[in-house]
Image 1 (tube, one colour):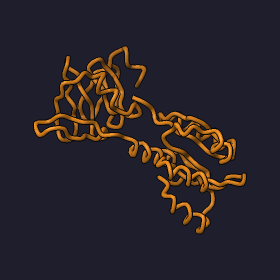
Image 2 (tube, rainbow, N blue to C red):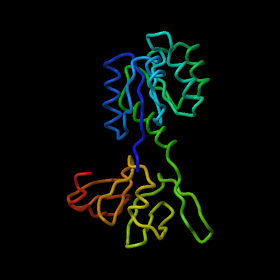
Image 3 (spheres, rainbow, N blue to C red):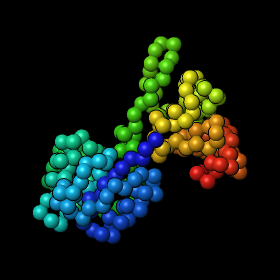
Amino acid sequence: MSRIGIVIIEDEFFVGNQLKDLVLDLGFDVVGVYPSAEQFLNTTNWEFDAALVDIFLSDTLTGLDVGEHLSKRNIPFVFITANRDELTLKEAARLQPAGYITKPFQRFDVVAALEKIRLSQQKAISIRTKNGLVDMAPGDIYYIKGDGAYIEIYTHKGKTVQRKLLKEIAEELPDQDFLRVHRSYLINRNFVESRRNGEVMVNGVSIPVSRRYKDAL
């Protein structure tokens, strides 16, 4: 499992650092923070998954210029803006950003924007059924139980059994969402309802938490 890598292009030092801390807190990796479009375009190796880009950067190139490059590479990005200028927003919309964060930003705005990016980055996993291979969205999975060489995948549709090790399915799932809590259980943290010593409730089901994994919760 790998974390989604984010770059931040923001010319206000304080804002850039705030965003960096928040992005890390939300379980993403920050690949780099750049104060200008020029520095970003001259030094990036393009090895990241998404970007947060200030539309109005202080140097010659703007966030719109960065957006053009990102669009050509099919890299999702979110525009950061304190300006509601209609012409600029129309130009920004042409680049089809994944979303907008308005300054001064609120935590929930950043959470919403990154959640949209996270969902767009999820890859379906292949599940073998009596009708052949089918795709299953990771976001549909409540939890997975391991039992030797088999796993039981629980979703809103019920239980699906696969011949696969728990550690193998874990490598196919996004670690922002899935967490090992026991040698026999992998849970989707988005469906956690409550936590108590030694157990966690996931969609109404009590899942044991072993000492080895309790610090991860």
